[in-house]
Length: 235
Image (cartoon, rainbow, N blue to C red):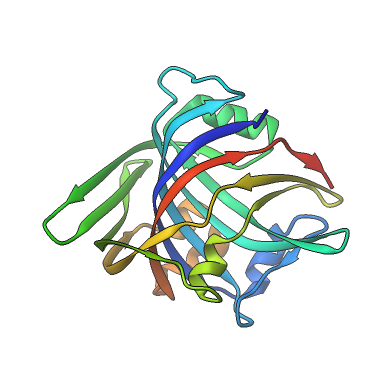
């Protein structure tokens, strides 16, 4: 049985080129940084969990909720194949039970904050907004896009960002948790505008303050799909 099953919907992703030296302290044992065209990325991701089940059960008041995370990309050599995955710097959700379960069982870096979202559908565009409250400040990630769904192109930066099917968590210098994430290939919407209003250093730590002065290399909106998080194993 999968640890978690849900629909991940309307994923807004802002992707920043970053100096790999910033990421290396967070690199889990037996993984290495993954790159696209020799560039390393960190992504701010906002999306909705819908119809969430943990170990096959729907937990009251924890079925539909927002998440915003900051992540980067790695790979791990398993036998003769490369497994491509992500490492989370922090995952923000509005539900304390999700935080407790994920941090306890998977040693992830969840934090509970007040959150809200707004999905607006206008005549010729979609507006997808995620907000989270840190201390007294509301932070915002909002994307304006076309309404038509498009395939994600092969060998594109968008494919690189979305086609990572494992999660890796640094437990100790010689211990890593690995878990598989299953979902079909996603479709995307063409983004026409975006707004990112937050202090990366304040929320994600001093090492990521540099993102405050940068514009993302790309901003995406993926439709999402049903997804599952499988049980972990130790590397």
